[in-house]
Length: 375
Image 1 (cartoon, rainbow, N blue to C red):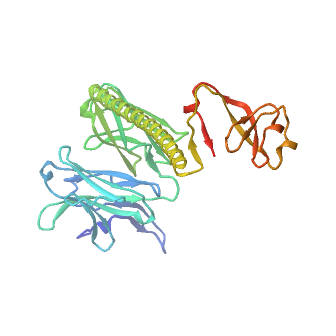
Image 2: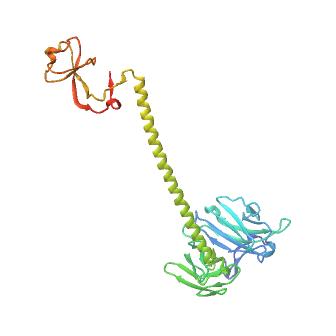
Image 3: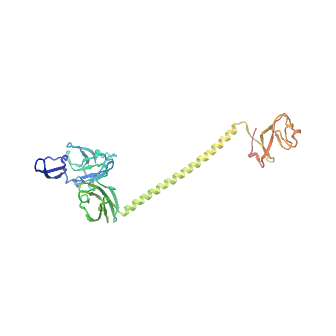
């Protein structure tokens, strides 16, 4: 096969005819890559519909300053660009981030649908339109993914341990735990000098990996490999100081939040008190205005040596009071000409109006500050 293109990747049959259509042979998998020695990645990934995935692509040191990009193969010997590192165009769907210090660029795809199924190109621009890169096949199954992890980003503290659970439906060969640019292991042993404990729970279909005695140099990309698919995981190792500082920063943030909460509550209380005081002042002012504007109200100039009583006007006597009044009661002339005591029948003027004095509310002392009389 000559002039191979990425579209030629796939499965082929190497067969020998026996007789009339029958044959024997074997299946061959062909993967066509560009510059495979310069750029590497995971090859095949399975992502649940509606989910997201982050895929790393590593490159040679000489490509640190080159533009990296991500495109999709459309089966017409062309690759439709999606995003470039020099103009990331971050969106909710696709993003790219280059990390020259670790010689890796990372693509993240969100909200995958059936339309996301297919081949993608993880590339580095060289010059004059040429590029190096590698192909990644992305599958989006209807049900659960064939190979997945709970989290693609895990963090551990130096000297401590970190665990990853790889979940699978089935696998072609034994599962492996690999480091990008390093080696792979299938059983508990050492990986690049780091002790690794592996437990394969075939009942629950969980491949658990625990890396112990972590060091800063263990930070990097790893993946679970079932012999066909891979799922990448990034491990970050921090020092205990950084971990404590992070915890301290969280505590400081919590303290600041509580401070703002208390200050806010204090301001609300002060505002409520101010509103109550304002309401009372306004209410008193309205009452004073009503009294000043109503000619039916007047202030009395009272004698502090006297006693006073509210006049009960509900029982006003008109006409000839001599025939209506009880000599045991006290009466007041409505015109305030004076209080009549004793036998009112002999003292009252039949041309005036009178009211019974209600002495239940007698005011003593200096009533000048307490009494208002409605005329």
